[in-house]
Image (cartoon, rainbow, N blue to C red; front, side):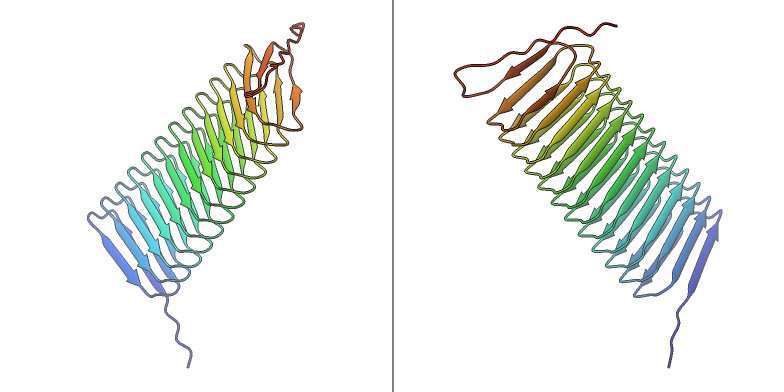
Length: 276
């Protein structure tokens, strides 16, 4: 005997709606122009949660597969997924978004034109975090593999990765960027046309740090081999602190000061200013 369960729950222009589904298959939850919505799904497969023009939405999915969470033009959204596979979380034109994924595989988190976004992923694999035209973004990844973090035209970005492998952090046209990586392998940090960039890497291997057209850059690497640092068209001097390094490659066009700790002789390199 074949048993098929297909639920279609639709609410429009409503207040104080509570939708709860447990141990279900093929669930579709759609809410438009609603206030105070609570959507809860546990141990489900093929869940689609869609909310448009809503306030104070809470979407919670636990132990699920194939979840799609979409929110547009919303305020105070909380999207939480735990122990799930193939999660897609999308938020556009929102304020105060919180996206949380723990112990998941193949997570895609996308935020566009948002303010006060918090993206948190722990113990995950194959995470893609994308933020465009946003303010006050906080992206945190711990104990993860194959992380891709991309930020465009943003202000006050904080990207933190600890104990990770194959991390790619990219920031374009941003202000006040903080990129921190600890105990990682094969990290790529790229910043273009930015101001006040702070890049910190500790106990890493195969790090590539690239900054172009930036002001006030501070790059710090401790106990790392195979470091490549490239800076082009920098407005003020670059300060590098490199301790116990091997195979160091430096490319620059302005005054560079290089210091190595625990060495009797500290080399200093000064390049001629490039003709403008």
